[in-house]
Each structure stands twice: as C-alpha cells, then as structure tokens.
Image (tube, rainbow, N blue to C red; front, side, top):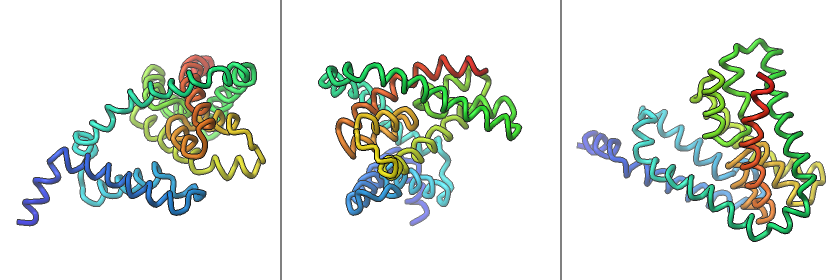
Length: 232
C-alpha cells in the first residue's frame, strides 16, 4: 500500500511543485540563521537537495519538471520585473554609464576568452568548447548561443547554473577581501559573471547591488552573443 501511494505521489505534478517550494522555504530559513555564510545560499542548498532527492528516488528530470514548470513560468515575469528598480534609479545608472560600459566589455571578453583559452590549452573538442564558452550569460541565452555554435545546450545549462552558484557563494567574501565597498560595483560584477543566481544573491545583500546586478545580467546577455562569435 505504501509503495502504491508513493507511485501515485511521484507521478503527480503537485508533488514536485510542493517539494520545490518547501525546499526553497527551508533553504531561506537556513540562510537567515547565518546570513553571512555563502555556503548557505538558498539557490545552492535547494538545488543540491532537489538533485539528491531525484537521484536517490530514481525520478527522472522530465517527470520532476512536469510539476516544477509552474515555477519556471514565473522566471519570465521575474526577469521583466527587474526593470522596475532600474527605472526608479535611472539617474544613478546614468551617472555611472561610462565605467559600466567599460566593465561590461572587459568582463564579457574576459569570461569568454579565459574559458576558450583554458579549453584549448586542455584540448577540449569544439562541441565542449562551444558549450561552456557562454557560461556567464543567463541560461536561455547561453543555451541558444551554444546551439548556434553546434554545442550541447543541456551541458551549457548545467555549466551556467554551476557558474551562477559559484559566483553567488564567493562574491561576498571575495569583495570583502578586495575591500570593494561600493554596492553598485559589487552588484555589477556578480551580475556580469553569475547572471540570475548571482543577482538573487545581490538583492539579498543590498537593493543597489541587486539593481546593478540585474542590469549587468541583461546587458551581458546581449554582449556575450556578439563577443562569443568573434572568438569562434
């Protein structure tokens, strides 16, 4: 009877939708206990827990996504909503326009160029190189770029998420160690390197950091799609 109940629950989309929401709530609570601990980043904790649950229960990703797609649908409106604080602080963005443009170009070229350099150094085949090169762009854009370069979009998605998690974990201690106190600079840097996951982390630290992180994420998606083709 218990196995029959589990089969029913496992095939229900609401199970994984509810599990994701519960896991995120637990992860946020854990992060609030030690807000300065980068390892307790809610995105990192919840993704790790869900991945472990799928692995040990033998549930494939497609079945999980059948329920989680309702949350995925909200990604679009959430991204568009990043334009609201940008509009409210437009004057601040204009004041920093020149350094932002310079940082954007240098950051994008560095992210792509360093990846391609290391990939060629270690003899990565073209498909693998094309899959990892756009890792600092947001997931949808990075997957489209990889596909156009004959890479593997699925691998790209995994690399992009890993990049975002790593950036969200190390950004605060790294910026503190470098004594960078300007939240606009901190936010722009993490958004440039770690897209949406980094932006979520930036917003949890400071609204100005989140604003500039979201701006960097959007602009880098455009610049990456241009720069990556110059390298290839």
